[in-house]
Image (cartoon, rainbow, N blue to C red; front, side, top):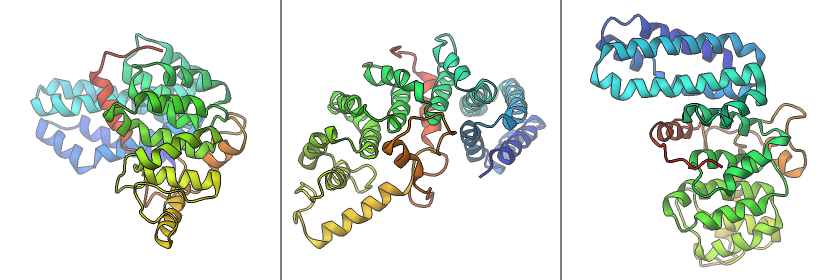
Length: 324
Protein backbone atom coordinates (compact mmCIF):
# COMPACT_ATOMS: atom_id res chain seq x y z
CA UNK A 1 0.00 0.00 0.00
CA UNK A 2 1.26 3.49 -0.87
CA UNK A 3 2.04 5.68 2.13
CA UNK A 4 1.16 9.04 0.56
CA UNK A 5 -2.61 8.48 0.10
CA UNK A 6 -2.89 7.16 3.65
CA UNK A 7 -1.03 10.18 5.02
CA UNK A 8 -3.39 12.47 3.13
CA UNK A 9 -6.42 10.57 4.49
CA UNK A 10 -5.03 10.84 8.00
CA UNK A 11 -4.45 14.58 7.67
CA UNK A 12 -7.97 15.06 6.29
CA UNK A 13 -9.40 13.09 9.21
CA UNK A 14 -7.58 15.39 11.62
CA UNK A 15 -9.17 18.39 9.90
CA UNK A 16 -12.58 17.01 10.88
CA UNK A 17 -11.44 16.83 14.49
CA UNK A 18 -10.35 20.47 14.35
CA UNK A 19 -13.80 21.50 13.17
CA UNK A 20 -15.62 19.65 15.97
CA UNK A 21 -17.66 22.08 18.07
CA UNK A 22 -17.85 20.05 21.28
CA UNK A 23 -16.46 16.85 22.84
CA UNK A 24 -19.36 14.75 21.57
CA UNK A 25 -18.77 15.85 17.97
CA UNK A 26 -15.04 15.31 18.42
CA UNK A 27 -15.56 11.74 19.66
CA UNK A 28 -18.06 11.01 16.87
CA UNK A 29 -15.57 12.21 14.25
CA UNK A 30 -12.83 10.11 15.83
CA UNK A 31 -14.76 6.84 15.96
CA UNK A 32 -16.59 7.39 12.68
CA UNK A 33 -13.33 7.53 10.73
CA UNK A 34 -11.74 4.52 12.48
CA UNK A 35 -8.95 6.90 13.30
CA UNK A 36 -6.92 4.53 15.49
CA UNK A 37 -6.33 2.04 12.68
CA UNK A 38 -5.88 4.69 9.99
CA UNK A 39 -3.29 6.60 12.04
CA UNK A 40 -1.03 3.65 12.87
CA UNK A 41 -1.20 2.30 9.32
CA UNK A 42 -0.27 5.67 7.81
CA UNK A 43 2.54 6.32 10.27
CA UNK A 44 4.07 2.86 9.95
CA UNK A 45 4.06 2.99 6.16
CA UNK A 46 5.50 6.51 6.18
CA UNK A 47 8.30 5.45 8.50
CA UNK A 48 9.22 2.55 6.23
CA UNK A 49 8.86 4.27 2.87
CA UNK A 50 12.18 6.20 3.11
CA UNK A 51 10.93 8.51 0.36
CA UNK A 52 11.79 12.21 0.23
CA UNK A 53 8.49 12.73 -1.57
CA UNK A 54 6.70 12.17 1.77
CA UNK A 55 8.39 15.11 3.50
CA UNK A 56 5.73 17.75 2.64
CA UNK A 57 2.88 15.43 3.64
CA UNK A 58 4.61 14.50 6.90
CA UNK A 59 5.33 18.14 7.71
CA UNK A 60 1.67 19.02 7.16
CA UNK A 61 0.57 16.03 9.26
CA UNK A 62 2.91 17.06 12.08
CA UNK A 63 1.41 20.57 12.12
CA UNK A 64 -2.14 19.19 12.13
CA UNK A 65 -1.38 16.85 15.00
CA UNK A 66 -0.01 19.72 17.09
CA UNK A 67 -3.13 21.78 16.32
CA UNK A 68 -5.47 18.91 17.19
CA UNK A 69 -3.56 18.32 20.44
CA UNK A 70 -4.06 21.95 21.45
CA UNK A 71 -7.74 21.79 20.48
CA UNK A 72 -8.33 18.53 22.39
CA UNK A 73 -6.69 19.79 25.57
CA UNK A 74 -8.89 22.89 25.44
CA UNK A 75 -12.06 20.80 25.76
CA UNK A 76 -11.11 19.75 29.33
CA UNK A 77 -13.37 16.73 28.93
CA UNK A 78 -12.19 13.77 31.10
CA UNK A 79 -12.55 11.10 28.41
CA UNK A 80 -10.64 13.11 25.82
CA UNK A 81 -7.92 14.12 28.29
CA UNK A 82 -7.51 10.54 29.55
CA UNK A 83 -7.61 8.63 26.28
CA UNK A 84 -7.43 10.86 23.21
CA UNK A 85 -4.71 13.28 24.26
CA UNK A 86 -2.15 10.51 25.04
CA UNK A 87 -2.94 8.82 21.73
CA UNK A 88 -2.49 12.06 19.82
CA UNK A 89 0.81 12.61 21.60
CA UNK A 90 2.01 9.17 20.49
CA UNK A 91 1.00 9.89 16.91
CA UNK A 92 2.78 13.23 17.01
CA UNK A 93 6.01 11.61 18.24
CA UNK A 94 5.74 8.96 15.51
CA UNK A 95 5.07 11.60 12.84
CA UNK A 96 7.97 13.76 14.03
CA UNK A 97 10.35 10.80 13.90
CA UNK A 98 9.14 9.86 10.41
CA UNK A 99 9.65 13.47 9.30
CA UNK A 100 13.23 13.42 10.60
CA UNK A 101 13.83 10.20 8.68
CA UNK A 102 12.42 11.69 5.47
CA UNK A 103 14.52 14.85 5.80
CA UNK A 104 17.83 13.64 7.18
CA UNK A 105 17.77 9.86 6.92
CA UNK A 106 19.54 7.56 9.37
CA UNK A 107 21.88 10.33 10.59
CA UNK A 108 18.91 12.41 11.71
CA UNK A 109 17.22 9.44 13.38
CA UNK A 110 20.41 8.61 15.28
CA UNK A 111 20.55 12.19 16.55
CA UNK A 112 17.04 11.85 17.97
CA UNK A 113 17.87 8.52 19.63
CA UNK A 114 21.00 10.01 21.21
CA UNK A 115 19.11 12.99 22.63
CA UNK A 116 18.33 11.88 26.19
CA UNK A 117 16.28 15.05 26.73
CA UNK A 118 13.87 14.16 23.92
CA UNK A 119 10.57 12.44 24.80
CA UNK A 120 11.12 8.72 25.18
CA UNK A 121 8.36 7.83 22.70
CA UNK A 122 9.94 10.03 20.03
CA UNK A 123 13.31 8.38 20.61
CA UNK A 124 11.66 4.97 20.33
CA UNK A 125 10.06 5.74 16.97
CA UNK A 126 13.36 7.10 15.70
CA UNK A 127 15.09 3.93 16.92
CA UNK A 128 12.41 1.81 15.24
CA UNK A 129 13.00 3.74 12.02
CA UNK A 130 16.72 2.86 12.15
CA UNK A 131 15.91 -0.77 12.94
CA UNK A 132 13.55 -1.05 10.00
CA UNK A 133 16.20 0.38 7.67
CA UNK A 134 18.96 -1.70 9.36
CA UNK A 135 21.90 0.13 7.73
CA UNK A 136 25.23 -1.66 7.69
CA UNK A 137 26.90 0.55 10.29
CA UNK A 138 24.12 0.45 12.87
CA UNK A 139 24.92 -2.88 14.56
CA UNK A 140 26.89 -1.30 17.46
CA UNK A 141 23.80 0.77 18.34
CA UNK A 142 21.55 -2.30 18.42
CA UNK A 143 24.17 -4.33 20.26
CA UNK A 144 24.34 -1.79 23.09
CA UNK A 145 20.63 -2.24 23.78
CA UNK A 146 20.87 -6.03 23.51
CA UNK A 147 23.74 -6.19 26.00
CA UNK A 148 22.49 -3.65 28.55
CA UNK A 149 20.47 -5.20 31.40
CA UNK A 150 17.48 -3.00 32.19
CA UNK A 151 17.31 -1.32 28.78
CA UNK A 152 13.71 -0.56 27.86
CA UNK A 153 12.10 -3.67 26.44
CA UNK A 154 10.54 -1.76 23.52
CA UNK A 155 13.97 -0.66 22.30
CA UNK A 156 15.38 -4.15 22.94
CA UNK A 157 12.56 -5.71 20.91
CA UNK A 158 13.32 -3.48 17.93
CA UNK A 159 17.03 -4.31 18.23
CA UNK A 160 16.23 -8.04 18.38
CA UNK A 161 14.19 -7.80 15.19
CA UNK A 162 16.94 -5.82 13.46
CA UNK A 163 19.58 -8.37 14.51
CA UNK A 164 18.34 -10.89 11.93
CA UNK A 165 19.88 -8.70 9.23
CA UNK A 166 23.39 -8.87 10.72
CA UNK A 167 25.22 -12.14 10.34
CA UNK A 168 27.75 -13.32 12.89
CA UNK A 169 26.01 -11.96 15.99
CA UNK A 170 23.78 -14.87 16.99
CA UNK A 171 25.76 -15.21 20.22
CA UNK A 172 24.44 -11.82 21.35
CA UNK A 173 20.85 -12.99 20.92
CA UNK A 174 21.58 -16.29 22.66
CA UNK A 175 23.03 -14.46 25.68
CA UNK A 176 20.00 -12.18 25.77
CA UNK A 177 17.61 -15.15 25.78
CA UNK A 178 19.54 -16.82 28.60
CA UNK A 179 19.46 -13.57 30.57
CA UNK A 180 15.70 -13.04 30.31
CA UNK A 181 14.44 -16.63 30.32
CA UNK A 182 13.75 -16.52 34.07
CA UNK A 183 11.63 -13.37 33.75
CA UNK A 184 8.31 -14.69 32.47
CA UNK A 185 6.97 -11.31 31.30
CA UNK A 186 10.12 -10.46 29.34
CA UNK A 187 10.36 -14.01 28.03
CA UNK A 188 6.81 -13.91 26.70
CA UNK A 189 7.44 -10.55 25.02
CA UNK A 190 11.01 -10.92 23.78
CA UNK A 191 11.39 -14.70 23.53
CA UNK A 192 9.48 -15.25 20.26
CA UNK A 193 11.32 -12.35 18.61
CA UNK A 194 14.73 -13.65 19.71
CA UNK A 195 13.98 -17.17 18.47
CA UNK A 196 12.59 -15.84 15.18
CA UNK A 197 15.77 -13.84 14.55
CA UNK A 198 17.93 -16.86 15.41
CA UNK A 199 15.82 -18.95 13.05
CA UNK A 200 16.42 -16.47 10.23
CA UNK A 201 20.17 -16.29 10.93
CA UNK A 202 20.52 -20.12 10.84
CA UNK A 203 23.71 -19.90 12.89
CA UNK A 204 24.97 -23.32 14.12
CA UNK A 205 25.80 -21.71 17.47
CA UNK A 206 22.06 -21.50 18.19
CA UNK A 207 21.61 -25.30 17.94
CA UNK A 208 22.27 -26.03 21.66
CA UNK A 209 19.67 -23.43 22.65
CA UNK A 210 17.06 -24.87 20.31
CA UNK A 211 17.84 -28.42 21.44
CA UNK A 212 17.39 -27.38 25.06
CA UNK A 213 14.03 -25.80 24.27
CA UNK A 214 12.77 -29.13 22.87
CA UNK A 215 12.34 -30.29 26.46
CA UNK A 216 12.36 -27.04 28.46
CA UNK A 217 10.60 -24.62 26.11
CA UNK A 218 7.18 -23.06 26.54
CA UNK A 219 4.32 -24.36 24.42
CA UNK A 220 1.52 -22.30 22.92
CA UNK A 221 -1.38 -22.90 20.56
CA UNK A 222 -0.01 -20.06 18.41
CA UNK A 223 2.96 -21.57 16.56
CA UNK A 224 4.59 -18.13 16.34
CA UNK A 225 4.77 -18.07 20.15
CA UNK A 226 5.45 -21.77 20.75
CA UNK A 227 9.11 -22.21 21.68
CA UNK A 228 9.02 -25.98 21.21
CA UNK A 229 7.58 -25.77 17.69
CA UNK A 230 10.10 -23.09 16.72
CA UNK A 231 12.89 -25.27 18.16
CA UNK A 232 11.69 -28.38 16.29
CA UNK A 233 11.65 -26.58 12.95
CA UNK A 234 15.01 -24.91 13.63
CA UNK A 235 16.69 -28.19 14.66
CA UNK A 236 15.33 -29.89 11.55
CA UNK A 237 16.71 -27.10 9.34
CA UNK A 238 20.11 -27.14 11.05
CA UNK A 239 20.56 -30.92 11.31
CA UNK A 240 18.08 -32.50 8.89
CA UNK A 241 16.49 -34.63 11.62
CA UNK A 242 13.24 -34.50 13.59
CA UNK A 243 14.24 -34.49 17.26
CA UNK A 244 12.12 -35.82 20.14
CA UNK A 245 10.35 -33.17 22.19
CA UNK A 246 7.90 -32.71 25.04
CA UNK A 247 5.16 -31.56 22.66
CA UNK A 248 4.92 -34.61 20.39
CA UNK A 249 4.98 -38.18 21.65
CA UNK A 250 5.82 -39.68 18.26
CA UNK A 251 9.17 -38.16 17.36
CA UNK A 252 9.11 -39.10 13.68
CA UNK A 253 5.52 -39.90 12.73
CA UNK A 254 3.54 -38.44 9.83
CA UNK A 255 1.53 -36.20 12.16
CA UNK A 256 4.57 -34.37 13.49
CA UNK A 257 6.12 -34.10 10.02
CA UNK A 258 2.91 -32.54 8.71
CA UNK A 259 2.76 -30.13 11.69
CA UNK A 260 6.38 -29.10 11.19
CA UNK A 261 5.89 -28.63 7.46
CA UNK A 262 2.94 -26.31 8.16
CA UNK A 263 4.92 -24.41 10.80
CA UNK A 264 7.92 -24.00 8.53
CA UNK A 265 5.76 -22.62 5.73
CA UNK A 266 4.33 -20.13 8.20
CA UNK A 267 7.77 -19.12 9.49
CA UNK A 268 9.06 -18.62 5.95
CA UNK A 269 6.00 -16.75 4.73
CA UNK A 270 6.63 -13.20 5.92
CA UNK A 271 9.57 -10.94 6.72
CA UNK A 272 8.99 -8.42 9.49
CA UNK A 273 10.11 -5.45 7.42
CA UNK A 274 10.49 -4.78 3.70
CA UNK A 275 13.89 -4.97 2.04
CA UNK A 276 16.09 -1.92 2.68
CA UNK A 277 17.30 0.44 0.01
CA UNK A 278 20.23 -0.90 -2.01
CA UNK A 279 23.51 -0.42 -0.23
CA UNK A 280 22.05 0.31 3.23
CA UNK A 281 21.99 -3.17 4.75
CA UNK A 282 24.39 -5.94 5.54
CA UNK A 283 24.61 -8.47 2.76
CA UNK A 284 24.76 -12.24 2.92
CA UNK A 285 22.45 -15.24 3.12
CA UNK A 286 20.73 -14.24 6.35
CA UNK A 287 19.99 -10.71 5.16
CA UNK A 288 18.76 -12.06 1.85
CA UNK A 289 16.54 -14.63 3.54
CA UNK A 290 15.12 -12.03 5.88
CA UNK A 291 14.11 -9.70 3.06
CA UNK A 292 13.21 -12.00 0.19
CA UNK A 293 10.18 -13.87 1.47
CA UNK A 294 6.79 -12.70 0.17
CA UNK A 295 4.45 -10.88 2.51
CA UNK A 296 1.25 -12.63 3.53
CA UNK A 297 -0.80 -10.40 5.77
CA UNK A 298 -3.69 -12.78 6.05
CA UNK A 299 -2.32 -15.26 8.55
CA UNK A 300 0.44 -13.62 10.54
CA UNK A 301 1.32 -10.05 11.42
CA UNK A 302 -0.60 -7.32 9.70
CA UNK A 303 1.34 -4.79 7.65
CA UNK A 304 1.18 -2.53 10.71
CA UNK A 305 1.99 -4.36 13.95
CA UNK A 306 -0.19 -3.14 16.80
CA UNK A 307 2.91 -3.51 18.99
CA UNK A 308 3.84 -0.05 17.66
CA UNK A 309 0.90 1.26 19.65
CA UNK A 310 1.42 -1.00 22.67
CA UNK A 311 5.12 -0.16 23.02
CA UNK A 312 4.47 3.56 22.56
CA UNK A 313 1.75 3.41 25.24
CA UNK A 314 4.23 1.89 27.67
CA UNK A 315 6.88 4.44 26.75
CA UNK A 316 4.52 7.25 27.67
CA UNK A 317 4.49 6.13 31.31
CA UNK A 318 7.90 4.55 31.99
CA UNK A 319 10.73 6.77 33.08
CA UNK A 320 12.91 4.16 34.87
CA UNK A 321 14.87 3.45 31.72
CA UNK A 322 18.50 2.36 31.77
CA UNK A 323 20.49 4.13 29.08
CA UNK A 324 22.94 1.85 27.21
